[in-house]
Length: 454
Image 1 (spheres, rainbow, N blue to C red):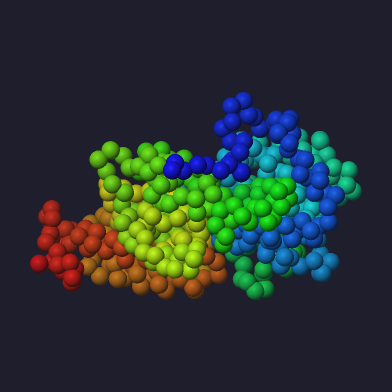
Image 2: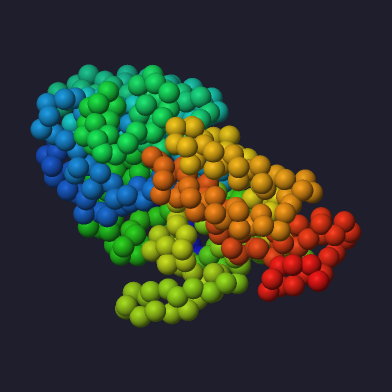
C-alpha cells in the first residue's frame, strides 16, 4: 500500500493560489478556533493539550501538556510564551515552510497557547538567516493586530497579549531553550543550569516561561478544535500526531513529508516516498533526526518492541518511523530531519564535516564540550588530511564518552552521539583510511580483527 501523507501542519503548504495573507487564512476558517478559545476555561484548554499526548516537535520530544502543567502560576510573576523558531539543526528545514507560506497558522497557535497559559507577552525567536521569514512575520502580526487577533482586547474577550519578534544571530546553541532565553534577555547565549533555571519556574527575566517549537504551537488550534482525545488517537499510542519529515542527502526525491507517527517504515519513506537511491547506488547510513542523533547503518538489525508487548528483530529499513521505535534502535527522532548517505560517501570525511560544525558552535561554557569538541574535530581533520594514527578511532570514542553527561546542555551529547555511532559502525573505514596513509600506497592489507597492517 502506498504511503499516504496526512497533512495537518502542512495543510496549506503548496496549495495552488494559496498566499500568506490574513484574508486567505480567514477564508479557510483561520482564527475561528482562537475566537472560540478565548470564551473557554483556561484549565480546560490546558487539559486538552495534556490529553492529546503531543510531544514537542523541536527535538527533545517532551510532552507539551506536561510542560504547560509545570508552569509556576502561584508566584505572581508575569508568564511569558516563547516560540522557538531558531531552526538551526543541520538537516532540518521544516519550520521555515510554515513561517514563509502559512505564518497566520503560527500566530493563531501562539495566541491560543498564550491565552491558555495566561501569558500577556509572547515572543518569536527566529533564526537570523531567515531574513524574509522575519519580514513576513512582522507583516503577519501587523495584519492580525489590525483584525483584533493580537494586542489589546483579543477577539473582544478583554484578554490582551502582544507578540514580539526577535532575530537570532546565527547561533546554533540558541536552539536550546535556556540558551535561547539568555539570548532573548540580551545576554550571551549560555544555556542555564537546571535546577534552578527550569523555564517553567525561572525562565525569561527569571519569570515562568513556556518555550515551544513552531510546529508544536501550530498543533494547539488543532487540539482545541477536535479535542485532545481525538488527537491522541492519531498515529501510535505513545507518540501521537503527525511528523513533518525533512529528507535530505543522497535520495532521488528529497523534500518535506507530513505522515502519521508509525504509519510507514524508514524503507517505505526512502523508497516509496523519496524514490530510493540514485541509479547504481545503495543506501549506506541514515541519521534519522537531524545531525545530532546517532547514525543508523543500512541493513543492521534491532530488537523492536511490538504493540502487543512482544519483541521482533527488524532491519533498519523495516523500523516504523516513530519516537519509540527509533529509541529502540539506540537513536532518536529528534527534529525529524532524515539525512541520507549512500555508498559513495566517505564516512570519515562526513564525520569530520559534522565535527567542524559542532566544535565551532559550542558556546564554550562547559570544559568537556569546549575542549572535547575541538579535539575531536582536529583528529578527524587530521585523518582526512593524511595524518591518521591507528589509535585514533579509540581516542575519538574516549573523547566522546567523556563529553556525554558532563555538560550543562545537550550540545555535548549532540556532537558526541554521531561520533560514537559513526566510529563504532564504520571502524573499518577509519582503519582502512589510516592504514593506506601509513602504507604510503593505494590499498593496504588490513587484519580485520586487530586492525593492524599485515
